[in-house]
Amino acid sequence: MGFFSNLFNKKEQKATVKKRDLLSIEVGDIIEYDLADYEVVGKIAYQEGNYKWYSYQLLGESKNIWLAAEMDDKLELGIYETISIPLADDFPKEIVFNNTTYFLDESGHAQIKGEGRSSSLTGQQIHYAEYCDKEEQSFISIEEWNSDVEVSIGYPIESFEIKIIAGS
Image (tube, rainbow, N blue to C red; front, side):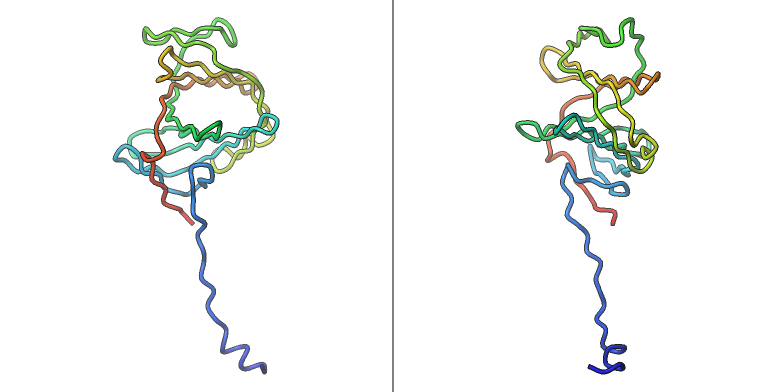
């Protein structure tokens, strides 16, 4: 082919959008959950050894929530909201909140990689603890970021409750 045929016969390249699943959500995607739309404005990837899990910060019209996703024996999902509770101990064996007792399920340290609003967290290491009630229908998550402590309460959801609309 000559110069002019190369110049005038270029085919348009179509942008391809990668299909998303609950472990590959990206900042800018839209999440439909509980009859509301949320924009993914932050993403945190936690890694402890070879184990990895994710939290997505979802900005809605009336509230901010977090979607947690991890592949254990099966896909586990949860919706979390930040709460404020006094902690006498860094990670006590039990926490009582709203007349429900939560028991320490696991704790450890994880390396962080953040994106979007969470990008400044990249490279940090957190100390975390996960608590659950007796029925395993409500959870409390504690994350210690240097001297800051964040506490969230959540509940499990099923994958069919979430719809992902890729942002790009």
